[in-house]
Amino acid sequence: MSTPRPTPSETPSETTTLWRPTGPEELALVRESGWSAWPPRLPEQPIFYPVLNEDYAVRIARDWNVKHSGAGFVTRFEVETGFLRRYPVRQAGGETILELWVPAEELDAFNAHIVGPIEVTHEFR
Picture 1: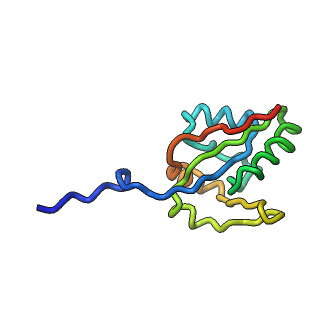
Picture 2: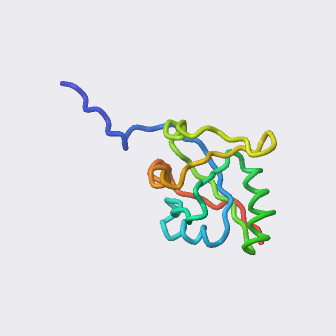
């Protein structure tokens, strides 16, 4: 008798930790999703860009989001590593300024590969 194969949802997968600096409006939409998904992009936002290190996310949340929105937040979340391989790492400045560029039309698929909740790690006002 053969052992049944696990379904994909039962198969543990390797994950990659990503961070996302965000303002209060986007964070409210993440909260509405049950901390499980990023909201659709606005027409003027063709790219969703999570970042690869916490320090870079802190700088954006503290230095940009607070100035433009009155508050900035850093979120941390896990995404299946195999899925992320389709997005090349982009260096957006210095050595540690690393981002993934996810086209807005692929955000639903990206959200489907988030593992666990999106968590707030820092808050700036």
